[in-house]
Image 1: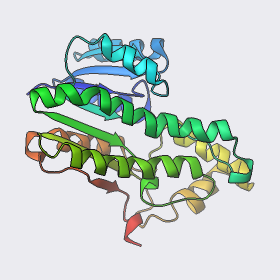
Image 2 (image 1 turned 180 degrees about the vertical axis):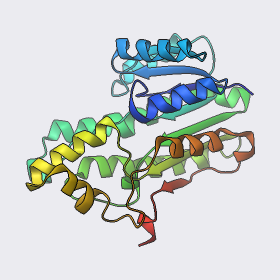
Image 3 (image 1 turned 120 degrees about the vertical axis):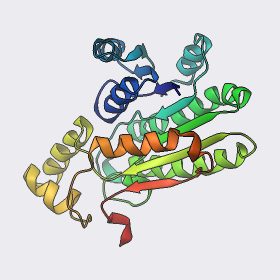
Image 4 (image 1 turned 30 degrees about the vertical axis):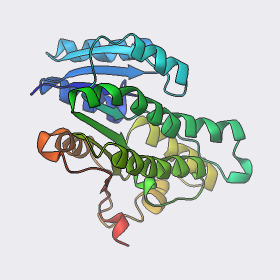
Length: 253
């Protein structure tokens, strides 16, 4: 059955792949991104392939922008995918305070406000799926990523709370926690860590990023898509408050 799916940060990387594949599977996609033109271009590319999508500008770090966005929607959201994310890598002593706070705003406050906005209609129709694209760093920590790790850990606590608050309805909230996916964001991290540690980018991949993972491999976007599709299903109605690791065995240690 076709669903209306709202995805944040969906003009590139993981969000774009999910948007494209869900659209081609018959769902209507509301694709949002900070950059309006990129969002519209991504939606147009999906439509050209036969999918049903529209692109919108949305700054998830701005609660007023979120409220304005939802005030203009003409149809309820069945599935919310909180995907927007940013990264900044630095020792805490060198981490700008405004940057630290901004990461929380994008990856923790933003998803909370997006969830707050979709819940009333989800309750009204007695169906909703809220899927957070978290990270392995929602479960474990790495040096120099204090803001990112804090936000992603907070997302799991937030999701547990909302699962309790929505236990009386057919609404679920879960967090997908992949290890490293070779997206533009991760490519930037590789370059930043190479500079920070005086290593080559391949050394960063081998000795930092993939070192804790028994399978020694980047996670594919199709693996995340498969998990999202599973969580969207009617039969996943009692899977809620879960942090689902796609980590090649990282958290087994």
